[in-house]
Length: 511
Image (cartoon, rainbow, N blue to C red; front, top):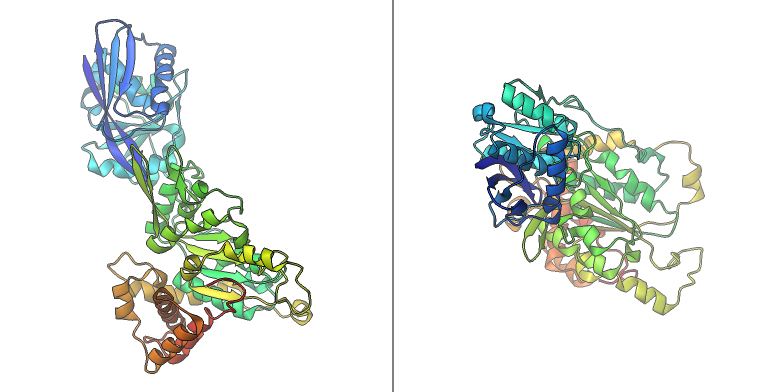
């Protein structure tokens, strides 16, 4: 007999419908799975056989063929265990009483050897793909109940294969998946600290406020102890709240990676801080079985690269595509996957290996060769994709000893939110979410150069050796400064302020 069970698969961070076709025929006992199945799927044979037997059912000693359709798309994951087991039972006539519910339901779950239905990764994107199928509901593992409920699709949970078969044949109701893990307006507390704790560095605070208001990338260069890491870790506290659409995108990525906390919707902007020994694949994604990297894990949030020049040259160069296209495409012989990577990059670096090149009081101990090798790790094309470049000076005792506190993160955040509100109104109906992500046509439309602005930009381009991309980024930053000031147009002083964030001493790092 032939049976068909509906299930779901994952490609990148998007789900797609999969039809699990099971044929049980007379012949020598065999169990074959076809349809471009990955190793994880093929290993399900042993789990399915044991789960069926230990759930009190007879496993048929016949020729069993399982086809995962569409056959041209690669299937991976352990969530096909449950639909394969149900397909075998249905083909043997054990689910005749299930009626049309078996035809109108999607099944997802990993099976333990005793028949327990275990949780799976990537359930959220799979559930969101249900709108493309003719099914009306889903049955998922009990441990994935909250994640299934987040999608808004009608879903029920089952603890074991035996209880599920009993519910299907007796036509009784299973427990409905309910989202009880988070409140709709919940916002996290920022563990990184408050901006008022940073002594001095008013110039750097202003630059970071602009970066948060427009989603701009920023590079901080300064000696050890000048506050680069301290400022970066407090950056999340001035970022605007994440929107529902952005939260859903982030949760999809974390679901594929198996990092959703209790399955609830992630309602904070990610802050990723990888170590400088990270590999290229871990940074941008890929591998034998493609999965998202750190740039995608930072989607709609912050990617902080501390000690930028300590990263390998190859790791830094792979950042070019996501910084320009806001996504990463991973291609393999049998499949390709596209991962979103729209993040704000915060990078910090010392001016040299010892950190004291150009220091007013301490002498640099690095040789010219060491300094040159250190500089060469950060290429000109990568620097060209960073909107703001600032230099930090050592904190003086007068600043460190002052008792009065500066502006708190909440005060700065209010200004950032006001600027983002203007941008949301400006880009209504488009995919652009902040000034940093404007297209060329949007720059022409919303970043009109003020009078005398053309001569200022020409002088800056000739003096600093700026590229056309750099000029576009200056206009984007100017637009953000105008938004912070509540101005509908870019003024001359905003343009000049934006230029100074790219005018650091070119002898410190290469152009």
